[in-house]
Image 1 (cartoon, helix red, strand yellow):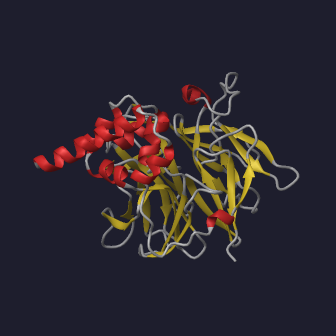
Image 2 (image 1 turned 120 degrees about the vertical axis):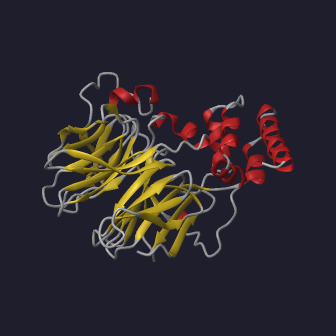
Image 3 (image 1 turned 90 degrees about the vertical axis):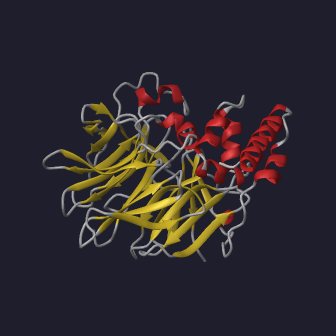
Length: 377
């Protein structure tokens, strides 16, 4: 690194520290570090409606069962809930942990390893079983009637999975693809994982009949969302820190190799395929000045971790100080087809997943106490 760049970044870090030491209002942070506008975007998501999740926070993933009922979602206290519709609201459906006597608060990160933290959800369309990627407890499954889920995978080569994140199912070949975001950090340390540019994430294959687990990709920068292609010729995996969507080939002359399907302008979370074979990618946030520096220089993020600032302030730096929502629709070949936003975060913010169902878009968020629904006009 040249001396001018070193001086520039060091100065920027000092400015950041001064901003927080002076308790500068968030508005000032917005003006200094706000992410840029994306050309061609549609600022439509502010017209979405929200469905509160009473007594809960963080409906990360959304999935409908084979009968079209739901959606189902996992929340921060370890429960998986089912939406029963207007008038009936949410009901408890399943849990991944039986040790729930202390799991009474909507948000208690220090208890997540006890209560469980369900993230990615997928139904097996042939059996109606729900498969769950629990950040702390590993890969689980529960039957169509819910209840206590059964553990399938919680370790690999004798070492516990640290951060199980998302999954997709290939019913035809009896395989589940799932991610472990890090071998170093757990879910409640996700900011440290991103800021340090930890690259220990992995993409796994689990064969249900043999119960064999195989690593397909490793060395990933925060392995996150997973989506199998419509023809099952490849599986996609999201790298949240780098903003890349990687394509791992399962069939054809490139089988066993991977390439970059797309680069998105932010920190992507989950990825979901629609009925047309396209993909919706939810961005936790776009990348501003600080986000780009973190993504390109690990030492800068590590420097920020040493500053006397709290989680909320670090998160504000990461997202550019501005709550917003951004969803990107990609073609099968990675072409950007559409970008939808709530640029000011008036209704939606920090989205984690976009699930398309019967012409509507359903939005999850790992931080918010509600689910969003948008119906294009």
